[in-house]
Length: 443
Length: 144
Image 1 (cartoon, rainbow over the protein chains, first blue to last red):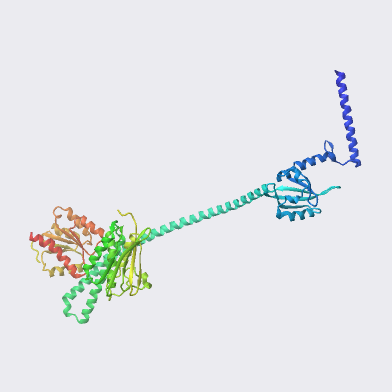
Image 2: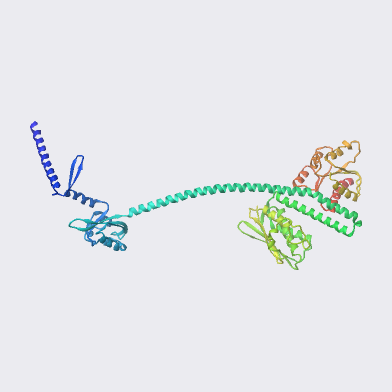
């Protein structure tokens, strides 16, 4: 047992001695320059890689690397190709070896690559190019060319890198960048929007506040007009009353001039009184509650015309009254609208030999638009903005009576019905007044 | 026109107004059975025969023409007091005012006014309105 292990041990030592001798022999050969090898010193001692032992890993490396690799002559004839190139093209190695590298290059790139191969004698070159696969598909690749420097071989090595993933990655990166930019822009926009929103809210608040103030001051103004008209009514009435008494009791003792003065006082007081009553009424139109019911405008117009006909001997008037809609509104107030508009039409056609008054309507999506048209003396559109103002008149007292509050009343009533009033006119050719009323559910 | 049984009480504080009313009444020939008071309290004194009217022997009132804007106690308050008083509530009261709002008018009528008239600006209309109520309340009751 002991003898046996002693013999094994001495055998092992003998083997190690032989290996050591061999190693030392190789080492001295390398040192003499007789053998190509690489000597790498490590803390554990020198390690030797001979060319022979290094060649195998290089082949394997070239064969197994993911990039496609090709060696070729300077004419482009392929000497060697690795499997990756064959896999990339999906063409068997047997058909690649010996063929022209340019056959795999996309048509438009051939010239550039040909020149590049020629230039690769002196330079390392790289270019983004394109190759054509077996199925005809053209893909982006990077082709790096470098000269292989061996003693017996003049060749070019080409490394072909598939850029499809890179392109996708690049695109993705670009997209990501764009996204980041967009995101940033969006954030900015959102922030701006928020600022605008805040500003808008603030200005809305301000408008609301202003509106409230306006409402209040309007109400105050209305109240002021109302109470003033009330208070002034008594003295005006007294002037009118005492002027009348003077007329009745002292007419005989007054001179002709004195009588004229008294007439003027009397007429002025009466007119003032009428204006104040109209102002009160106008003010009341703005203050009083509107009682909306379903109103048949045909009926209102019929009543208005017959009432106005009673008041004056209306003879030669052509009435063209179309059918009108039913609306939601305050019947008393709407009657006042028609009374004003129709009596205006009558008044201003009075001097026409053949007066014509048309009443009808149109409609759009939300509103009925009623018109009262006449062929009377019309008006100058240059003074349009005075048309609807209280006590503003476009025609003098001598030809046409009135205080100038009728259209202001019409406007106020229509506004309170959430409608609009407007007019068109031409001197001596007539006027058309329009008002709109919202379409609502008519019960 | 002559008022035979019941008379007219006018509550009015404005002298110009009183003059104008008097002219109208004189024109109609109504000269007696007309009393004018210038304050609300005085109207109540007259109606209840107290204060300076205690010892006098006023006529029986068949119509009160009541102004709304009276000093101290307003016309509306007087109206309410009259309508709340058993002895007075049957007397016709017509509000005769220079002007009043719709609201005031409604309140007057709701408080028991027989009518609520706004004094017309034009003198003849003013005169007519007075004659109309006098006829309606004093002459028809006299005819009864």
